[in-house]
Length: 154
Image 1 (tube, one colour):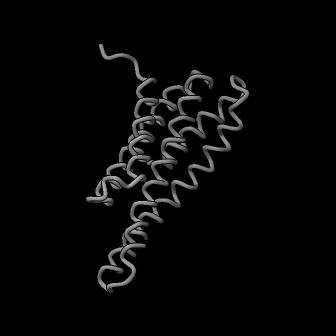
Image 2: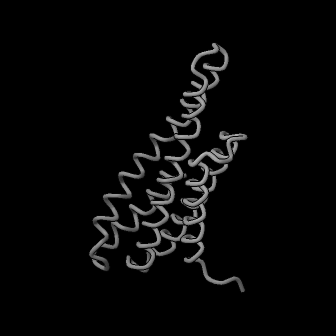
Image 3: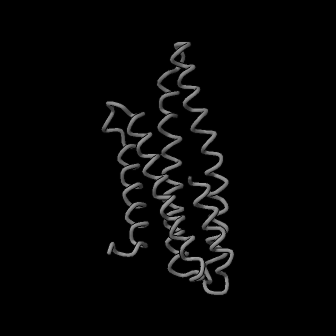
């Protein structure tokens, strides 16, 4: 979802250079986040498979388990950043592309919440893990930012 949201931000930023001086910078960062989002899909899957293998082989379970939290935390961070970029594009970019930016923010916020869900499950009983607190904060911020773009319910 991070990559899809970032792609929408790229689209909107590409077509916003006449309306907003910051569009080129937003485009560049959205592109980097799209690439990172695609890489994180693989990283998250690999982390989980390595954890399963460590459990089966009685290897370094602690390190492997830690990576099952680190990968979704990176995903959550990227999602929160995409949300912030989408909000900037929605406010400053081409008004014809505002719906794309709103959808991007919504998808990115959902990705942040999804990352939080994975982290919550993966930390298990270690509820004081600082990565969980960081993910909660990032997901909350992303959700609030995306929500700021939606019109009030009628």
